[in-house]
Image (tube, rainbow, N blue to C red; front, side, top):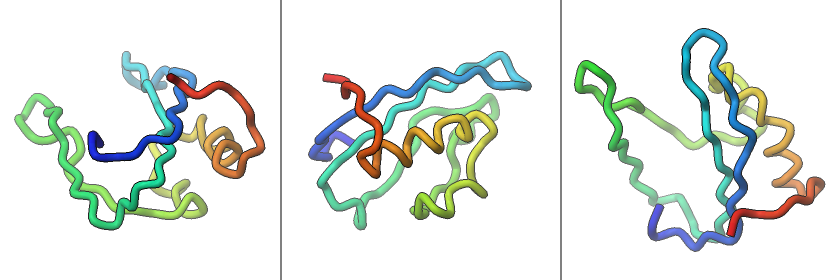
Length: 93
């Protein structure tokens, strides 16, 4: 992520998990950097020593709903609105 040209960074509302005592802290990063060659790596691990995220793939916003965790559903409309330019709120500086 440190090689991205970040144009805007939006902090989304924290969401409490329904079944666990955890909170999802989400951000939307808008960049003009091509991510076609981005190599993803996860530096956080679960108890068994496995990466917290063991796989990923690029998907369109139209198809993301079938891949989202319950907590991520709360942000779909806001993300779509930000991307389409219909919501106006201050980006994080």
